[in-house]
Image (tube, each protein chain N blue to C red):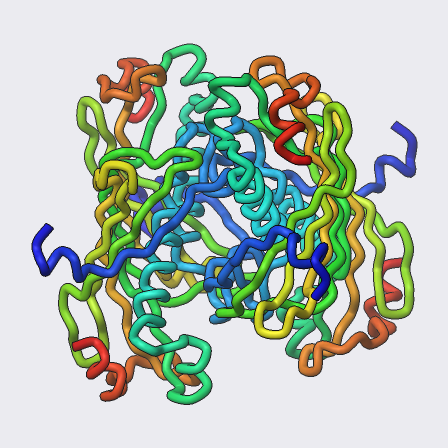
Length: 138
Length: 138
Length: 138
Length: 138
């Protein structure tokens, strides 16, 4: 594993019954939940709590687009790792590249792209990502 | 079917993949979701929209207790009926008796009791159910 | 409204508390749930029950990719309409174009593209969509 | 903290947006999800993986009743601890007492009782809990 690969943020997620459907696999919408958990923890690892961001900086990050490519199903009781990487940083938005991997063999189960936009917590209109936050991403 | 039975409020719910788990049946927590849909529609049928209640009457109804007895599983694609009856009306709370039935044969799949409390939308403290709302329940 | 527009399949969805998050809007992953309900009902309107398809034709439709563009938020208690159109029909897959609209003013809240693949219910390997099903889509 | 208290199983749960509703608090049904995660991990800590139990011992544990008392709301971003204790062990069923606590101050937010029944994975009929499993609970 190369140095760059080692630095990719990973968040462990366990598959419980609540995540699965009658097909015996993880319900397709749940991968968006898993990815948001990883983005939340990625942000927390950089020192930002989202409830404090709303109160203190008046900003919220909202998802403006998402795309998912399902390759192999995750199953009940699987241990997963969800990655989180910044693909592109803009003034008011962040494009994330994420993967849901099976921990046992690192197989990529789902590839996900998500754009989040920084909005004013009051008006919900886009506004620039605060400088201090941007710097913490570097 | 007796007259009393005919008057029981029923709300149809279809079981989609999202409601099921890898056991092939409806996930146990989902029955609470189904029951809340029925209570919301029961309230709507009496003329009350919950978003308007918050804005105009400053009240919210919150669940303070719930109990569920699971008798038979609901399965993917089942058509269900969820009943909603007031078991007891208090000054600040309503006790509901609800059932989740399979439409095909009226089998009771789950029996549910729920208490909702009327609270001030600002302080979240209990307050009497507004008179006009109480009257509409009679 | 043109004739073509009138024929687009629409499925009504009501926003309940279960669908919303602390931001006061519908949680972003839920739009995939809403779209699946509409596809299920679109299929049912053509005479196909998915549980019967598994038992009698040994086929399941699984989502292989999805993309969502969030334009405006849906809110608690909103009445929505979810559209369902076939964008492209292939031998083993169907590409759907869907929209989540606010019923009150037909505003498009979310645009969604979904590809579902026909797979063998036993092996979960792709297989051609049965002829009778294809014909019912025409 | 007494010795007995120290031994109570606790599983950490973080509140994400997916768990909350437009009231700004955790949706009431989600506490059942949180409790099941804790029971799953309690079982895993005793050496039992539920997917292996199905394959190797042909048993599944299903929820047959649940009751919840909501005392204070959990909020977005809260760190929670979910406890899991056996209240009563029967031949075919286990009664659990669980609590959802706020990690910051150990305040009990929700008290939960759940009965799970051991059933044959094929017939779904109740059957005695296998001896080896019972012994691991002592």
